[in-house]
Length: 414
Image (cartoon, rainbow, N blue to C red; front, side):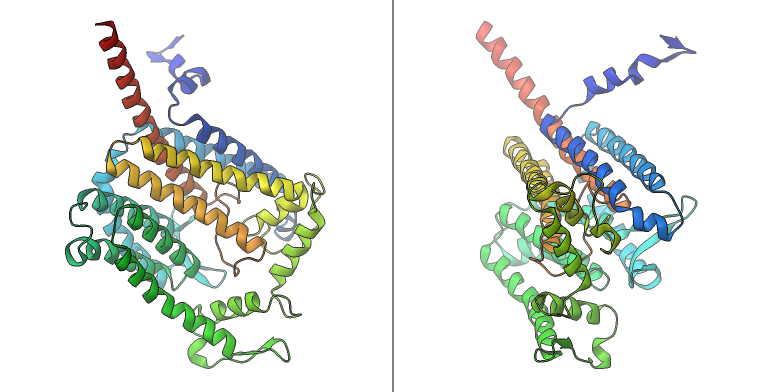
């Protein structure tokens, strides 16, 4: 069918499906998680809709739009040759640094943190740490692939790699400590896989542990165990987000006390009500009491409605995603593609595990969302971009494997 010189056939669903390459299991995982996202977001936004005098259907439609845009991002990103990200890695990294600085001083303040900047015209808040993480992993992957001969040396190999990690994490930490810690952890895992010296990595871990132990020390110092309540802190600890970090550590350390975090209490109630098989889709009761049930604590709602079995299925899906990504990395003949796919897959899975750990009270409360499941935003779109890049690596691996098979067949014929 032709229409004024435009071939409509190439825009049909069948043609798009035939052009979809990469790991089919990862594509299936994207479909499963986004479908679960629709159910969970629709169920958990009732209270938010009531407070803002909106309908829950409006949030369902918003999530459908985000999923449609996200899937389009995955599709077009996977069609690009992943080597393009090596060429733009340095530019994105340099751009992300002033963006993070701008966000710290002039960013939009939401939930007592300057993590976002508001984009004009479309009026969408954009979390600059998402871009910074992606740029950092691109840059690290590029540098690791080039410095394999000197990676064991501190000055010429390790220092040029750890310096950008420190810069990005230091700029993210004041507004979002949990994201900075997860980004740093993923970077160190990537350096370990990239054959960096264990001695150098251990040194970085020890240095990073010092402020964390200081934070835990303050939490212990300013908590009265006898009365089970937090004590007033000096003014220098109430600046920025320090007070919030100390209180979160206190709530985690004394979660069995009466003064435990309200979020933790409600998440535990939701999980307890869910039992093995759950209350059923749309039957959550904790969504009316649990803060942010559509983002940070959406996993609790999933367990309440689908039970421990449903929660275990979500966990297994993320582990399957990691397994398929490792399989892609093993088959990738080029170092940059392997490092990039590994970094992006690890950061998504570590973020998912951190979110689930917070929901079941194995980790202090953080602000990280459940990838592809929590209500859409800039983080959702950057997650889709990361998956598209992973599928781009997989598509190129498939192409190389296909060429190898053809050459083998031709050789056998001869």
